[in-house]
Structures are given as C-alpha cells and as structure tokens.
Image (cartoon, rainbow, N blue to C red; front, top):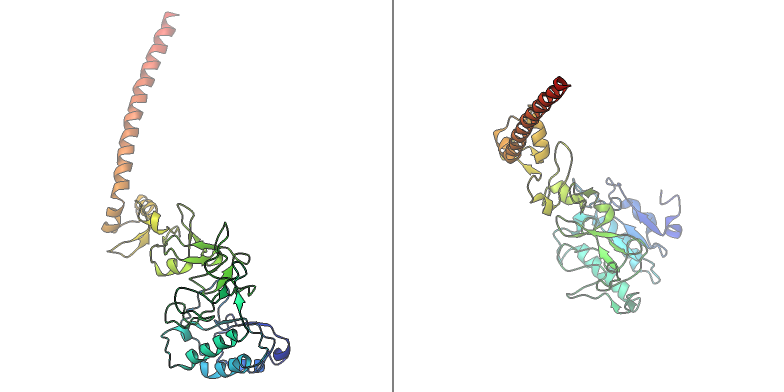
Length: 314
C-alpha cells in the first residue's frame, strides 16, 4: 500500500491502528522521507490502551533503520513518534531502542530553540532530566512529550488556562493532547488524567468519569455482573457498593443481590450476609406497613360504624 501511493513523497501521517501482525518491513517505502510528520507505531486506535496481549511481532531490527534514515535527513519534518508499548517496557540504556531515542532527541534539538506557545519558555523543560522523547526509566519512558498528538503544537506542562492545563498526557493511551484538540478528565478511581474518550464509563451513582483500565483491572472499582453498573472509588466505599463475594466470587452490587434474593436466586450465604442490612430495613418497613394497614382498617371500620349510625337516625 505504501509503495502504491509513493509514501516517501506523499504521506505526512501514518497510523497503523490494528495492524498487529506486521513485523515492520512494510515501512520500507518510507525510507528517507522528508515530508512524513507523524508515525504512530502503537498499533492501536486513538483512545485505546497500547498494552497488547499477545505482544505484536513488530521488530526494532526492521523499524529503527528506517526511522534512522528519516531522522538523519537534513530538513526532516518528523514532529511526533509513538512506539509499541512493548518497546518501552523494561528499558535498557544499552538497547538499540534507547540509542535511537538519543538520536531522535538530538535531531529535535538541532532545529533550534522551540518555545511553549503559551508562556514562551524554552522546551523541553521539567523538574527532572527531560527530552522530547522521555529517556528516564519510568512509566513515560519512550513517550513523546510537549507535543500535541493531534495538532503538533508545543506547550509546557505548567501552563494552564482558566479551564485546564494547556497540554496534558493521557495515562491510558499515553498521548499528549492540548486543550484545543481534546478534553481531559480525572478518573475518580485511579485519580489519573485521561482523555474523555478513554473514560468510557461513568459512576452509576455520581456520574463521575472512570477510565477503562480501572474497570478492566477492577482496581478501585468493580462492574456489577447483573446491571453492569460501575462505581467510582468514593461511591464504592459507601454502603451498598459493588463487591466480590469471598465464597462464590460473584461480583455484584447490593441492589442486584437483593433482587436475586427476592426472586429466589441467591443461595450463597455470604452474599446474603452482604445484604442483611437491606433485608432488615425491608423487614422493618414491612412491619410498619402492616401496622399502618391495621390502623387504617380500624379507622375504616370506625367510619363505617359512624356512617351506619347516621343513616339509622335519618
């Protein structure tokens, strides 16, 4: 496909979403490109977690020489690179990948001073050693910083407007977005900043956003197996949250456990214990309703008697 469109002379952005079977040799038509601006090798779509299982066969041995041929060119137009998640795991300063990151950062520095569009401070900048692509061994290793994935505008992470920071990184998809391209939100379970589109779930009680990894990993929140409702960390700790039964391992909220009990579908004793307070509340309410019913019946009988006496007098 790249050969057919003469990619080396025509293609500016390449995103290989869902191309999980490639080894990287298919990128050969891009060798030496002077116009390519963005290459996304994460192999996932936007707002998707890049941690693929099983790991894809895309290889540094095939891809890095092609990227080097682009980066080494005077007049290179490359603005943004996104790498496969597995390349960023277990970083080693002795790896070919780490060496390429150094060459890419050197290429970016050779372009001269790049400044934040908001405060005009020189980039890259931060509290620790920082490059355009992170080379410090942490969760952000191998990710592109200070550059919006959508529009390539440069901002520092300290500048903010009245609404939000000018640029933020999504903890889920590991991409930076400026506030003009995409809204960000704080996941109310892990408290990390994520793209709005990476937070597809909402708390069933307070409607706050919850990121997809928290729901998938059951960290800080659980999804009810019956109603599919999800609770954030704060609501989860309140009475009646979604929890796992230690005996039958069924994940359910208290309301659904109560419904299952009412329909004779709740046989696990531990599950019943978890809704004992609701059953007690129901029992108290039921007793009160019986008493009110009795009282109304007595009142009704009294009214009937009085009505009968009035008729007899007439």
